[in-house]
Length: 465
Image 1: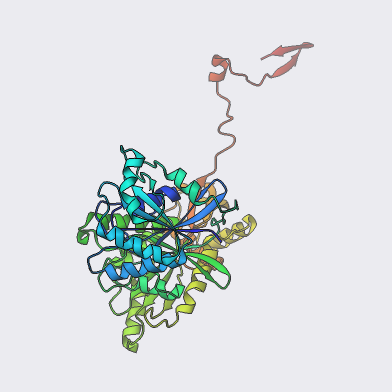
Image 2 (image 1 turned 180 degrees about the vertical axis):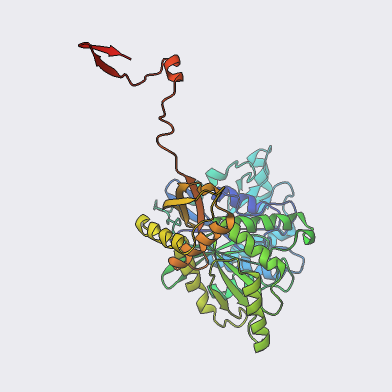
C-alpha cells in the first residue's frame, strides 16, 4: 500500500497549489477565492523510487456556511484514512484562531502530523516559522508551494522511513468520467458506487467544481472514477472559477477512456444533454448513458424518455443505456460492467486481415460515390490507434469521399466488431503512384542528374545514345 498524505488547513492557505507541486500536475483548481476545493482530490507522486498518494481537502472554516459541515466531514474522514497529515498555515497572516482549533483536532487524532508554514517567499525560514511553534506540532517546515521552495526537503523527510518500491502502473487502469448537466445526480452516483460518502452532495447546482479522481475496484478490476462539474450553457456561467471547472470537465473527457453521461429522467432530454454527448463524440471517447431518477416514473413517462434518447442522441455509436436510481441504488450494479465493455471496445486490437475483409463487405453493401465521374477505389486498411479505434484506409481519391460515407464506414466497422458506445475514426490515405515519381524527364539531361544509358550495336562498335 502506498502512503497517503492528506493536505489540511484553512481555506486559501495553498493546499491545492502544494497538491499540484507534489503530484507534478495541474489537477487541482487554484484560485484566490477561498473554498474552491470542496471534495477530496486524489493524486499520485513520487520522490526517487518512493511513490505516495496525496489527498487535497476542502478548507476548514470557522464560520458556518452552505458547505462548511459537509467539508468538515470530508476532512475528518480523510484524516482517519491518511498515514500522514500535512497541516498548512499561512505565514503572511500569522496564527489565527482557526489554526489553533485545527491543531487541537490533529493532536487528538493520533496521526503523524507535519506543520507546513506556507508563503514564506523573501522571509528567513527561522523568522517565518517562529510564531507557529505555539501550535505544538513539532518543528515547522518553511515552504513556498507556489515557487517550490523547501518542498523537496519536506517530502524527503516525510518519506524517509518508507521503502523504495515500484509505483503501481495506472497506464492500463480504465478512467471513467461521470459527466452531465448540473444537479442530475453525478455525485450521488459516485457515492453509491464507492459505497461511502465520498463527494459532497447538495441540491445546489454547481456544488462540484473540481474533477475528483476516485479509485474503485469492482470484481477484481481497477478503475478510476472522475466526478466532474456540471456543464451548462455558456450564457449561464458567471463565475470565473466555474468557467475553469467546465474546462476541467472537458480535460477529464479528453483524458479518460469511458464517459458515463448522466441524464435526468424526471426532465426531458434537452439540448444541453445532446451538446455534452456531442463533445464526448468529438473527443472520440466511448460512452454509456445512465438515466437517473428512473424510480417513480409512469410507463408513459418512461417511454417518452426512451424515445427522446433515440431521437436526440442518435448520433452516438451504439451506446449502452442503464436506467437507475442513484438515490436508492436500484440497478447500480449494471453500470461498471457496461463501462468495462465500453473500455474494451475503445482499446480493441483488430487484425489487418480481418479489417480488410470487413472493408470488402462494406464496399459490396454500399460502394463509395464517384468523384468527377471517376470511381473512388478503397484498396486496403489497417488499424493505427486506440481510444478510439483509428482505421486508416488507403486507395485512389479516398480523400474525396464525403463525411456521410465516412460515418457509414465508421458505423459499419463498429457494428461488425460489436463495439459498444465507441466511435471508429476513419482516416483516408491516398496511395501514391510509384511510377509517377520515377518518370523520365528531359530536364535530368540538362541538370546532370543520372539517367539510364542505352547502347546500340552498330558496325561492330558500341555507340552511346
